[in-house]
Structure formats: C-alpha cells, structure tokens
Length: 545
Image (cartoon, rainbow, N blue to C red):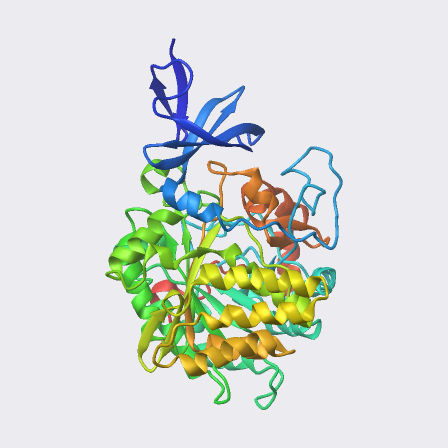
C-alpha cells in the first residue's frame, strides 16, 4: 500500500503501512492545512532525535514540518511550562472555533504582554522576508487615523504596559510623535518602534532620535520612545541581498546605531536599540556570532539581540522551506559554536521562565504584570552582564532553576497574604548568587527591580548593565500549532479594539483585516494631501551621510 506524505509542501512517496519508520508520537494537537487553511488534527512526533509536526487534511493529504531540531532541548523546555493569565476581556464568541474567532475568544488562555499596532502598510523597502507583505505594490492603504489609534490605545490602556508600533515602516507616518505621545499619556510605559532603520540612518536620524526620546523635555524623567527594534540581518552582501533585496543595504543599520547614539540625552541612554535579525538557514546563520559580538561592543546603545528564525508567512516563499527552515535548537547550537562556548545552549531558558519573577513583584508590590507567560516552545532567552569590559552570562552568577523555584514559592505565599514567608523565600532566591568580581552593584540593581515600588525605573537602570540575547520563532501555516497560539501573549490590536494573537494574524487574518479597515489609494492621497505615492522616499543605496 502506498500513501502520500507532503513534506514541506512537496509530495514525497513513502512505501509504508501505518506510521513512518522509527516514528513515535509524543503529543496530539491541531494545526492548519497549508493549502486550504482548515483546522486539521496534528501530532508532534519524534524521529532521529528531532521533533516534527505531522498533520492530515482530508482533501489535501498529509504534511509534515520540523518543529524542533532537538528532542532533548524540547524536553528541557517542557520543564518551564507555565499556565497563562486569564485575559481581562473576552471580545469574541465561539462560532467557527480557534483560530478563526480571534478577538480574544473564549479559547484564549493568556493576557496581553505586548500589544502590536500597525500604523501603516506602506514601506520604503522591498524585503522578501516581510511578515506584512509590505514589499508588495499597494492596491489599498491600511493607515488608521489618529482617532482610530486613540480608540485602539484606549482599548488596551487599562491592562497593557508595553506596545510595539510597526507596519509597513512606521517612520513614514508624519504623526509618529503624536501617536507615541498619546500612548505615553495613557500610561503605556514601554514603546518599541519596529523599523528598517532607513530614517535613523539618514542625516536627520540624530534629530529624530532626540525628538522621539525627549518629547517631555530634556530634564524630565519621563521619556518618549523606549526601544528602536532595528532590522539587523548580518554583515555580508549576500545576506543583505537575500534578506532585503538590496546588496548595498549594509551601511543602513550601522549608521542608524551611530545616529541614535549621537542623539542620546546626557542624563540617560534612550531609546535603546534591539537588533532584530531574521535568520534563514544557509543564508545568514553563519553570522550569528558576529552579530552578538557587535551587540556587546556597542552595549552603550544596544540592549540586546532578538533573533527571529524565519517564518514562512507574508512575502517569504515556502519554495525552499525544507532547506531554509531554522528552529530554536539550531540557533542555540550555532550561538554556542560561534561564540566558542562563551555562551552555551544551556545558558538559554524559555521566556516563560521569568514568570515567577513577575508574579512575585505583582503579589508583593502590586506592580507590573500578574504573569509573564508564553508557550515554552515559542522563544528562548539569556542575559549577559557587562561590567568593566567583562561579559558573563547570568547563569554563571546564579542557578536559575533554584532562583525561580524560590521565587515561585515566594509568589505563592504573597498571593495567600503570608508576607513573612514570602519575604523569606525572596531572600533565599538571592542567597544563591555566586561571588564574582563586579557582582556587588549588579546584585543591588536586581534587588531594586524587585523592591522599588516604581520598578520600571529600577529595571531601566539594570538594563544599562546587560545585553539580552533572545529569540522568538513565530509560526506559519506549515508549523502552526493551536496549543502555542492559545498561550500567545503578543496581540495585534485592530482599529475596532480586537486583540488577535500575533501568529494567527500573520497566518490567517492579516489580508482580511487590513482590507476591512483600509481605504483606497485615491482617498489616502486626499487625506495626506499628496499627488503621488513614493514607494521609496529614501533610496536604499543612497542614504545621505
């Protein structure tokens, strides 16, 4: 009997009866058929030490895609599963079922940690890896009015403290400063700007930095923009061409970092820069170590690196999916090899590991978030302490497993109102810190983060001594897993106030929702009072000095 399996959307014929050889099912879940996008039954299976997602569509057959390239790392990550936090609002009823009822629907199991707002679908670049297909010629314009954006901000202000402005390219909005100001006035403390860097690399980049940071005045402790989330894919012409479509892209992110540094207020270093490389297997994964080294050398301005293994959504073609797929264990292995063991695979933990810290601060001080949870297979992170030229992973200072266990107990006691026991476990969490040169001031800052009633300021001071290395692997229609989606804390905010889990939005809802809330090109031109749309107002290869 011959059965067909579609591997990476390519039909492969396997002469087998029943399961594939040496295959063991470890988890049942649900996914999407990559051809019709219907919800289909799926399984995570282990084969040859790797985890695959296998699914069956009655109409289109069987598909599989690699889920995690290391079963050992998969099991380790499972130890850090944490339940989500009940969302403060439910916006949609169950009709078609997850993931079609997003809004948030009754099936969602987590609150909003980061709100994402697209403020335009226009872009001045043609990146073939774009989530938003912003490289395509526009038949309609998605650009919410300031009144719509105010409504979106009002819908999240009561429970969301961090947001990202993105697009398209958000610096193309002439009212960008007004949007950021309106968010800050509503108490949204942390604001990221997701940018390709062209505006910051221009001759006006330093002025732009100053104006975005100090909109409340140079002497004010309150700042505007918190973080520039900067596209930064590597250093070689082949990388630039493959990931941006322009072999001469290279100077843009480097000049952007320089100009942002020049724009700093003497009192504080803000906005910080987070480098964001899209990593594609066989294209730029050999440059991971160099990117980390650049971040460390420029830690005065660069707060960290957030690697994003490529998602085959939006503009990214799935033609070479099998060849180009890159998972979190691949990334961690390359980091260890390319840093020559200075940063090891075991230095990384799932992002959900920090939830006990958030819970402790929440139940002790009533500040921050009641939890900081995402699915254990969505991302990973570590922190490097930078002190007097020395760079040490946080795991060299402390056993994080013991640290988080003590914090989990502290949070539980604070929640029950047993403050004395909670404080004892909080103290116990810090007693395991290993003595090293320079640890004194760093430990003091860590304690301030937990103990300062206005802990955002204390956290900011601590971050000036750290470089974060993290990764988020956003899903696409090939590796889509409903279990992960239902724990998603990154929510796209729409003009009607609906919150949609990020991967659901990129995979299913974006083209529908963008068109629903868009206007015609003619209407947009009239609104902006312009004669023609300039697809590339700043030529990529001729950014002014």
